[in-house]
Amino acid sequence: MRSVRRGAVLVVTAVVAVLIGAAVAVPYVLAAADDGRTYFTYPEPSVAPSEAQTASPAASPTTAGPFLTAKPVAINTPGFWSWALLDTATGAITGSANIAAPSDTASMSKAWVAADYLRRAGEKKQKPSAVIMQRLSKMIRDSDTTYTFEFHKANGNLGSIKRMISMCGLTETTGVQNSWSLTKMSARDVARLAACIADGRAAGPEWTGWLLGEMRAVRGPGKFGVIEIAPPAEQVAVKNGWLLRDDKQWHIACMAIGRGWTLSVMARHAGSLGKNHGAGICRKVAEQLRSG
Image 1: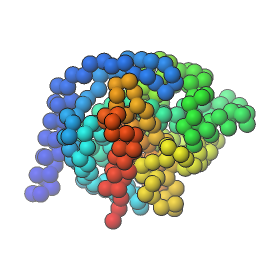
Image 2 (image 1 turned 60 degrees about the vertical axis):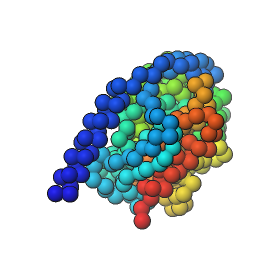
Image 3 (image 1 turned 180 degrees about the vertical axis):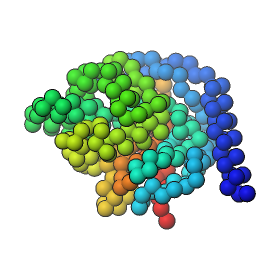
C-alpha cells in the first residue's frame, strides 16, 4: 500500500509542477554572454524567493554507482534550482520535480564545444596542432573563453548545438545563433550530455579519454560541486558554468561524471548572494545524494 500511495504522490507532484510551469510568465531580459555578445534570453520558469524546493525522485531510489545514490534532496534557498542523476548502467534518470525546466549553461557548454571539435577532427582524419590542443585544454581546465567562440564557429555555430541535441538524445535543449553560453538545457538534458561524453559519443573514440582527463583536471574557480567531496578514486570529471548576467542573477550550471553516474545541477539566484552560493547548491545536492 505504501508504494502505491508514494507513486500516486509522485504523479500528482509531476502534474502540479507542469501546471505551475505553464502558468509562469517571465518577461524577456537583456543578457550578456560569456563570448562578449549581448542577446535577449528566453522566458524562464521562476521560483518565489525564500521558497524551499523539496525534490522527489521520478522513480524509486536506485543505486547509480558506488558514490551517489538517487534519493530526495531538500535545500532551502531563494531562486531557481534543479538537479538530475543518471545511472549510466541502466539509463535511469531521477531528479527534482522541475527536472525538465531550462536554464542557460554559461561555460558548462565548453565541454561540448571541445568534444564536437575533436570528434569532427577525428572523423576527418585530422590531428589538431599542439597549439589547438593547448587552447582546448585551457578552455576546459581554466574555463578560458578567449578562443571558445572560434571553436564554436568552426563547429558550425548553432548547427553544433543542434548536433548535440540529436547525437545525445536531448529533449529540453535549445540554442541561439552566435552563442554557446546561452544554450538552454534542463538538468535532465545536462545529465544526458554528461553520459554522451562519458560513453564516447560526443568526442569520439580517439579523444574521449583526453577530454575526461582534462575535465578531471579542472582547477581554479570552476572546481566546485561534487568534485569537492568525492574521493580521488571516484575520478570525477566536471565542467561548470557561472556568470553574473545583466538580469542581476548568478546563473550556475554544474555537470559531473563519475563511476557509473552523471550528475547535473542548475541554479539561478540574486547577484547579491554571490557566486559561491550557487556553487554551494551544487555541492549540497551531491552531499545529500552521497551513499551511506
